Length: 149
Image (cartoon, rainbow, N blue to C red; front, side, top):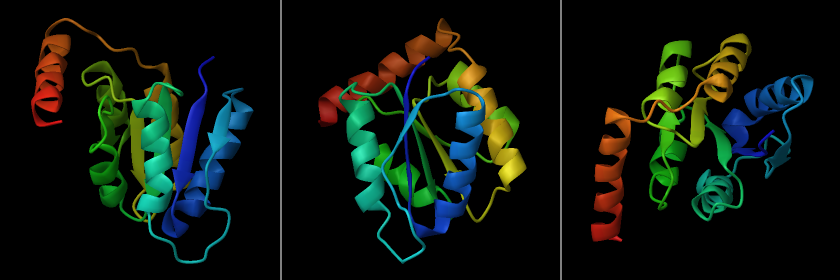
């Protein structure tokens, strides 16, 4: 099974810990890049290492959690080859993978409850990219990345 890199800021730490427990229970390997306490931190300090690892292909997938998920998703999508999707329900988690081939799942720790987050992660991990017309659309996004650097 693929390894996942995971991180959060202070606002997402509690949910990140629960997601880690879920991943352990399903046998999914992960690397936790922090945080490990509730002291206030700047989310980019934890999102950047995750996005870098996914961008460089060192790890195929990542999960980021902050208060709303908005900051982490904006940050992660600044990196080439990253398709970070902020999700808030099971349907968007599945579509993030099936239609957008999202390689980083972003969740708002102050928005989504633990049970729902587990279901979203499960759905995202089990879903498969459909390709076809969706690949054509992703290719257009890749062209934008190349042009804009």
